[in-house]
Image 1: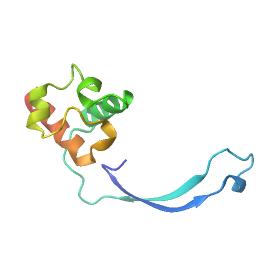
Image 2 (image 1 turned 135 degrees about the vertical axis):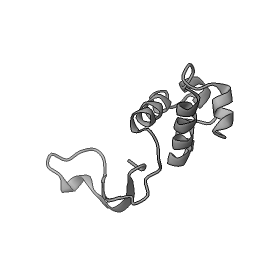
Image 3 (image 1 turned 90 degrees about the horizontal axis):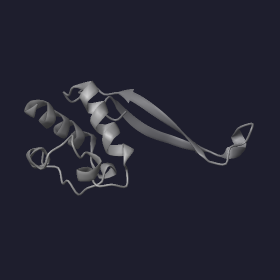
Length: 103
């Protein structure tokens, strides 16, 4: 979402506002289309992000094993022992573009 949208949290909504009442709080957000979207192959980006987050508690090296080499991590300036949630959208764009350039 953050690749194409600026996301702003507006306010929280308590469970009592719904019927039936959920066991969690909800949030209302605003999505504003980004003017300058970073250049990246959308499908390759989605596949990479999905793979990185599908094994969320693993390091990127382990979650992306067979997809990204040590050399590609280095070229993209991405720490392979980081976890997916530590990377920014720009980091994932850079890694995707590195993969596309080396395939």
